[in-house]
Image (cartoon, rainbow, N blue to C red):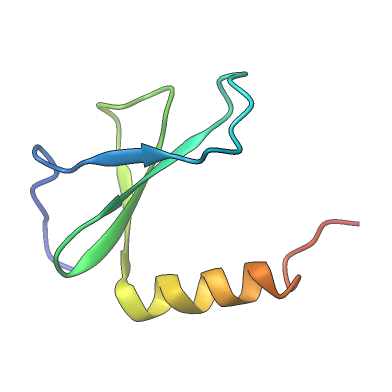
Length: 68
């Protein structure tokens, strides 16, 4: 994926965040989804193609990534 300008991204934190500083934030972009560490808002962000992000969400909701 090419470089993406995140300066105007609108970051959202999960409503399930407990406020303990261990959160991630997600930005819905035109062509991708960005993910960053909420403790380091000026740090790096991971970029995902929209279809890959959707597949991840489906897998997470389906319990495919549960830790035992």
